[in-house]
Every structure is written in structure tokens, then in C-alpha cells.
Length: 270
Length: 270
Image (cartoon, rainbow over all chains, first blue to last red; front, side):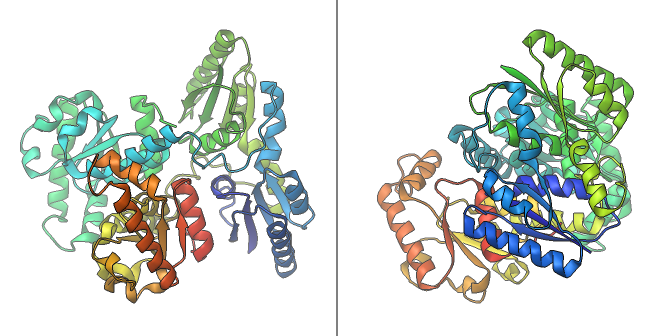
């Protein structure tokens, strides 16, 4: 068991994302994670150092400290804690300054704060858009959508739309293919005029059954026959209408979102 | 105008978080961002190199390349492109290996893939939880909530709940304080038994007015008097019932979420 600290003068999101990303490369080790966010004065910095020192004593080996400290004073303090410090600004900022021929602003909290109020407002609006246009609601808003996800119920449309909004500010609607849509090889009426915005999510019938069974155990809706039939027909519709689609059975919403961005060349709004 | 590439063998999320986080420190420079995800074979790596070379020619100065390539072969290729490469794994992995006394797995796609199906399923369930328990729905589920956000309409509860779910796998419900709740100094019935899970979101009346006005222009709902009255009463309820609360007027949902995690010492589920 190894203790890992994530320390930041603000939200700690960057330190966590980056630190956790590195730790995934060491799958055999159990880590105890300690998050110390908003370390923005000397008193808090000293407390953080004490915590690292205690962990060093208890573990008998130096904790890992992932940090995004703008203040070099606090960063030096952390370095004196006995932990092994990986500071993300420290590692890269000098080389970037050299490359750009400009000094960095050394201002904290820029990564996840409200920097540009217009862009921020549009991002929040994209979240509202995903909610208002979830599950086939408000097809009249599709003109404003960047992307419209479609597929059978429980193929991952809603979480993917929300992730596209939160992470990238993308306006994502979703339209579920229901029984009556699946009787024909044609696209549902609501989708016909927006063919270029469509992206299909498919899924293996077995995986779909297991997801549906969690919701409505032993229902016709969750039966393997029903799942097989719906998936086959949905894929037929995608192929017939040249809608690009993806099997989501084994991949995360992050991967689904990234593949959609990549395939449809969608512009991130941030 | 400077071109910046984000290159990854998988989703590119880590490369984007890292690069964008660093670039916020150079607010005066306009960057043109190019995202190249899923660069996972030699052909794609060569294409990426060509794109960097073209950008170098067009810009007349070397592009910045933020990369999370596990393959050292492709990484070396990128280095020969004329771009200035900031490779995230390259910068840290050797020092972490030294610290942990273990070799990294050198496996791609671990940061944002489905590594542990149980943890992943729980994270998706937390998104469903936020949706099902949005806007005061299903107060009976509050036993399963990690946190219940409360505040007047449009104080930021829903996007914050969704972010807490997507980013941290936290089960977050939200309960809006409506007219009838604001007549009394007591907590609404639905919240009384869950006092220890409550967190209040407040907002300046002027900011609230502007947000509400976007939705329903010139309505009573959006009037400054109404906003002032609701915010004052909501804050009275928070103070009277010792519910910790936060002014969300100037801060992002990332910052709201981080402050809640910090204050309530919530355990991330990832």
C-alpha cells in the first residue's frame, strides 16, 4: 500500500486526472489516495507537508505527491516533505516559455475556473441542451445540435451526450430507436433531415440484456430475443442509411465520445 | 497564432487536460488546436508527423505537441517532426518507476478505458442517479445519495450533480427550494432526515436574474425582486439549519464540485 497525494492551489482536477493517468500504469500496486485541494496559503501548505511526513512515517516509504502548484514557495515546501513530488507545471512550464518566447502568467485557478464567461455560459447551455433533448424529446431543436446520437434503449446515448457537453461543450441530442422505428428500414421522420449529424450506438445483445436486466429483471424488454432483434434491426437501419456507428459494449463513455469527435470531426467548444 | 497538437494512442483526454491546463498560463497567445486521437499504428503516426511538419511550414515556427504515447517508437517519430514535443509519460514514468521500484505496464488506453467493470458500472449508475433524482424527484432515494444539493431554481445544482457523477462517480441528488419551501425557516420535509448530506448553493440575486432572464425574459420569475427574496430566504434557511453553503456566482461547476468534495470530505468512487 502506497500513499499518493494530489495537491493543488485550486480544484485539484488537473493533478488528479494526470496523477491517476500515470498510476494506471502500475496496476499491481494498491494506492491510498489523499486529495488536498485549495492549498492556497502558507498555513495550509504547512499542514499538507505534515500530512505527507506522517504518511512517510506510517508507510515506511515516501508517498508520491502529484501537484499543480503555481506558487514556487509552496512547491519548495512540498519538496522538503520527504514525499517524491511530481509537479506538472514545474515539469513543463519552462520549456513552454522557451518555445513561446513568453513568460507564463503564474496565475492560479485558470485550468478549471470561469475564464471566458461566454464560453462558460455556452458550456452550461450545452449541458441543458443534452438534458432537454434527451430521449427523443424536442426534435425541433435538432437544428442547433452538433450531433444526434441514436440507437436502441440502453445503448449508452444519455451518458455519452452528457459527457460530450461537460467535457467539450458540444451540443448533443439523442433519439432512441423504439419499437415503431424498428419496423422499417427507413430513418424515423424526426431524423431524416439531419442525416449528416447522426451517429449510431450499437451494443452486443448479451451486454444489452445484462444492462436491461439490472433495470427490469426478467422482463420481455430485457429478454435476449428482444435485445437481439432490436440490435439487428437498428444496425440494419444504420447500414441502409449510411449512418456511422460504433459498438459500445466494451468501451467507456470517454472512449465513445472521443471516437465520435474523431469520426465526425466535431469542434470542441472550449 | 500558434498551432498546438494533442496526440494520443487512445482518447487524447489526458493530453488535452495537460496541454490545455498549461496553455491557460499563456493567455495572450492565440492557439490553433489540432486533436489527433487513436494514433495507434505506424501509418497514423506518419500522418501525424506530416501534419506537424505542414503546420511548422505554414506557421513559420514550431508547433507545440502534447502527447501521451505509450509506444516509444511513435514517440521518437513525433520528436523528428520539427514540433516541440511534451510527452507526458516520458516526463514522469521513469521517476515513478524508480520511486515504486516497479516497471510500468506500458499498456495503452488505461486512463479512460473500462478497467474495473464494477467501478465503471457504478459510475454509470451515478449518472443515472443524478438524472433520476434531479429537481426534487424521488426523495425516497436520498438514503442512497452521497450528497444532496439544495438551493433556489437556477443556482447550478443540476450541472454540478452531473459533474460530480461523471468525474467522481458520486451519487448526487438535488432538491430545489420552491416558493412553498421558502415560506418557512425550517428545512422542507423531504430534507429533514438527511441534514448531514445537505449542501446549499447560493448565488447573487443579480447573477440569478441574468440566468433566469435568459430562460424566461421579463417574467416575474426572473425579476430582481423575486430573485432577491428567494436568495435571502434560502440563505436564511441554510444558516438557521446549519447547512454549509457556497456562493456560485463567480465560479465554475468544477470549482463548486471541488469545494463540495473538500468541505464534505466525500470519497471519490473511481
